[in-house]
Image 1 (cartoon, one colour):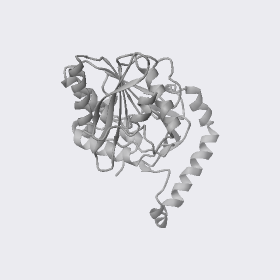
Image 2 (tube, rainbow, N blue to C red):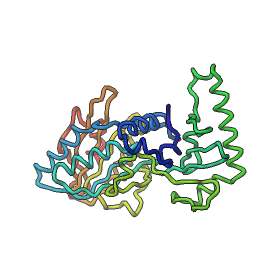
Image 3 (cartoon, rainbow, N blue to C red):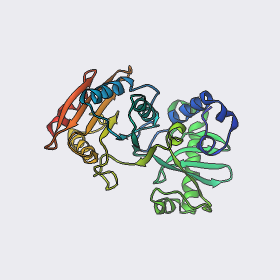
Image 4 (cartoon, rainbow, N blue to C red):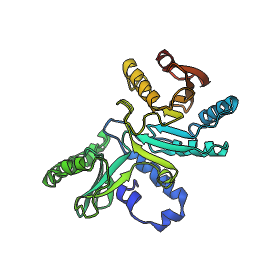
Length: 303
């Protein structure tokens, strides 16, 4: 059974606290059930980028450098970010890491005593919690014959009507991504939508960020190493958009000598990526490849 956001993030369950394997399994089911407003699922797995991490660390050792500030963008559930952080530590580095995602912050909304809704910052529903049972806002077509489609529509209509009654969208907008007041009768909690292992790691900063937009001031020029895994793909963006994203990531780098890693995982699990280094004139040079290298290698090198 898929757990609800309220059960997984807010309720204290001694059984889960004592059994990490059970907690990991429930968390995986939870993330696999979510579909973001942009159509993306938060699906990452332990050990996915082990070969990429090894290649990057080998380059650090070859060049005799020990970067300290790292940024992982579009981290999804954050599992791979934690793996990266641990691999850097095992290599003798002392990383200060920031993990960002387009949908890092979400809110748990209580509309009725038996109806909670997990929503994005703009109110887009990710999960309905009906009497403690998780319900997807988008019912799969094959389940319509069982009446699930009717109930999904019912929960959606109810959500919209009650949300309007409580002026939910205005409430959410006024928060600007910050936690709600303790006494808020509707918005009960702010949640960082990543694995509990990442949320409990005090050495990793968690932020919302859209790499398609200009770099915000608090991220500009901060990082010696930036990684973009399974986001800068030709299937997601046009060539022009990919170029703009790479420029935005360059703005997050500290300057010449900083590193950019772009990688994509194919359906069979093979990784193909490239390690770039920023030169004195603001252009990148290619240092190493994993597999066939990044599919946007030419775009990066042309900037």
